[in-house]
Length: 578
Image 1: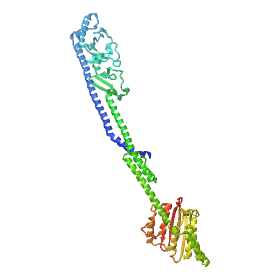
Image 2: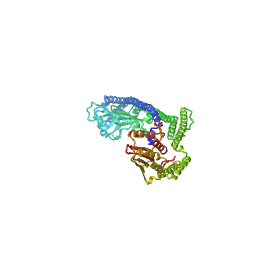
Image 3: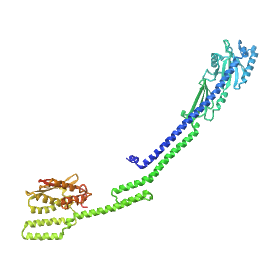
Image 4: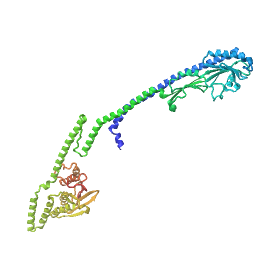
């Protein structure tokens, strides 16, 4: 319930409104950030790929140079002729020729500074000559993987990167070199082919790709035929081990491939700062929206809640409600207007209520105020003395009962009597009427629990009077007057029933309309109808509504030529003497 009230509060609606206003701006900012990041990522990727492809072209160019260089040497007749038709190039008979080959190889390789060594291996003996070490003895060269690959290439260029994984280790080849090999004489029909080998230092390739290295956390890896050749920064930390934090771009050309790896946090450092700045602005905007909504709530909703609370208190019956404030704005003017309205309304209600109450009580006391108790008592006592002296018993009994009736009715100090006392007092009046008419009987039936209940005095007398005068007295055959009481639904029910002439349907409908117009909020007797019409019954219902509230009621049920029943309902527990 509290959550539902908060959802319907003005503060929540204001905050939601400001956030909805910010939503398009936040969405555009986030979209712009992501879109710019995507564009930058694509541009960096395109530029990096272009640089990698350019670098691979240089590597390919170096390989092509080696291809041309080895082809020139392999087709050199002065070198080829020395190596043909010999069993062992290191024998004393061939030392001069071997020296000549060494000089020619040195002259040719000196032209290309990237070549660190050139040597020729005799296939049959495994001996050869090198530009750096002179004579070479390599008895197991036929078992080398690279040698077999060169022989099977049919004169094509073979690139060999020494590793422990491919062809096994080699005792002569250096892992810091890349070896380019070719058959010495591709046109020779020799069963034991001779192999020319040029060794290029990996540093030459490193120089080619080194210009791509722009940060300490970047690593560039060069591979040949999916085999590792070298990398520029093997110890670089890439995204704390998370592949998603590393930008990796790989390009391939022929058998060569190059791959660049760099942390995205480093690559997009400046854009990341801009992104953080944008998010910071978004967070500040949201905080400002909530803060502004709170200010608006304080300035608008809070005084409205004060007004609402004041209206609730005032409508709940607290007529002294006043709003205490120090505002000088329009809300202050509205609150001052409420205070003036509440004060004027309180005075008006109190004056009208007191006026109506005094008027109603004066009307209900009209019968009592019209009779001077002392004059009435003295007059009735005089009549009683004369009747008793002259032995007129009927008159004396009527007078003594009437005197007792008025003595209780006009007695001071009590406004309520128990139901039992009320009926006893009412019997004085009924006895007078019985002596006067002498043709109806009375039956009293009161539940024991109802006898001690106090009711307003003279409440039943007008009802009994109507039953006798307008019902039983007009019935020439006599009749019966019944008074009964019982408890039902938390209320006291008193029924006064006669077997008189009853009320015609037209008058009965008119009587019900007159009685239905009397409520606890409108208990004054209507002046639109004649003052003497149904005066007794309307007076009783007005007194019921005034003293007992809306739950009290008076209902009349009558059948013409059969009788009338009046039911009075009095709620128990109410203060009956206000």
